[in-house]
Image 1: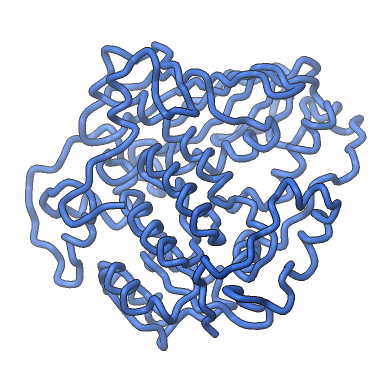
Image 2: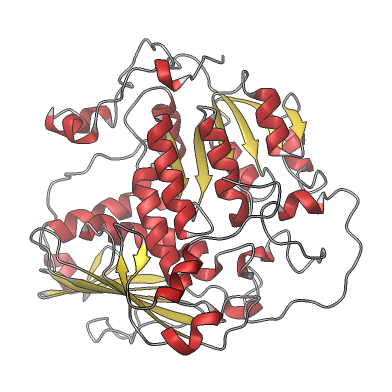
Length: 455
């Protein structure tokens, strides 16, 4: 049942700091939402949200399944053949190709929107929905540029809507254990972290996508079921080619955010939480050959963060394309050193994901009592927040900063800057959103939008 979400009339949410000071945070994570009976601009917990989906094939269909305990009332996708399975699953939902048309026609009927388009459309779709007062779930990495990620967080705060980014690992037990072990001093102060992924592997692994390739020269016809102009959205005009979709857009500068954007928000999130990271002071990169069309096949990005409270400065290194840090000597022979992982290096030891190494140290370690509320589930967090409960764990205040930092890595990988920045630190002023020593890099913090599209 739809209830008005005019945020000018909504009662203010309890601030997180004030909420935590009440000592009720743990309880609220597992019991009924704060506005049990609902209120002006609130959907009572007993009622179902009316949800519309933007980008509903592939991952978008999976997102909708995560929230289908609610009412799925409208669906939008630019390729109805690719979205056919989702349309069939929700036969009563109204169908659209242009999300702008859907939001205009359905504004009075919907409470919330999911966004699971290619990265280059995230911000324009999510911001349009939030400006209508709709709650938004948006897939990682939230946006295509640093500016967009910051803008999305600003609009969410302004409109007082419930938000969640699609990095499901934030709701996991593993993330909570990493935080609790680090805060307990299990390996002492952490000054170094390594995080890696095997993506994209340039097509070696069929699950992933190619990078380091040039634009195709042939121009095959556009499939009848696809609206290519709408698929391009705010991106620069170019001819259709199946090299871009439905999955491989991830590797193209104009559409995706590469391996770093695709998986960085998943892998870096527990590090951000455990080490209470904010803006870095510098970012530096090294990579394989670059071109103007696609991200490099493999890259390393070094972030340096200042001291935070009683935590010392820390260097975080990202690896993709199958690269990873040297195998730690503490890891026993024969024990797997995975193609995706996180290695914390502390003054008193090392932790691989949420396990101290060697395993003998893990067996000796007495884990602390749980100090972080456990999650009811990633999607459940967002649904609860939409109905007036505690903000979701990856709300845009948190996710916006995380995404900005992740996407900074792509700025220093820009091919136009290769002579200037490869292996050269770029000093970052996070408050003012600018690089201070290589000013030409600042133009890549945002993008231009094709005529007819804007934030």
